[in-house]
Image (cartoon, rainbow, N blue to C red; front, top):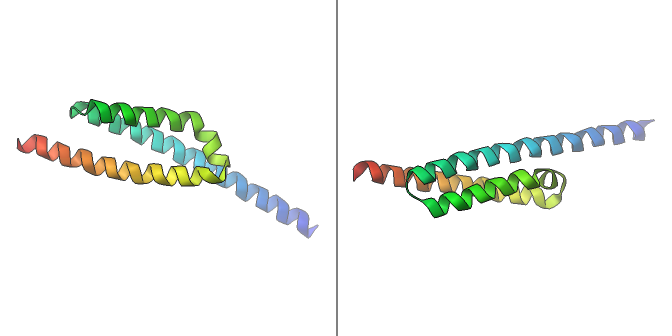
Length: 99
């Protein structure tokens, strides 16, 4: 009886992790889409295209990212990339205002 409850609890915890990763992938894809739009407005078409491609890839691969061990690594790297791109676009935006 006790092992059945443990396995059931473990199964629910795994489902929660998958759900959390699916939400994270969706949010990252949305954020990347917004960054692509911003990059386009700032005249960074190549960057915008690359970011939009990444956004579409995350959307397509969301389930695989959510259920696999490598998914958390990919999502972690995507999160760091988002921060880097945000800082770059903010700097470019400030430069555009000053010039």
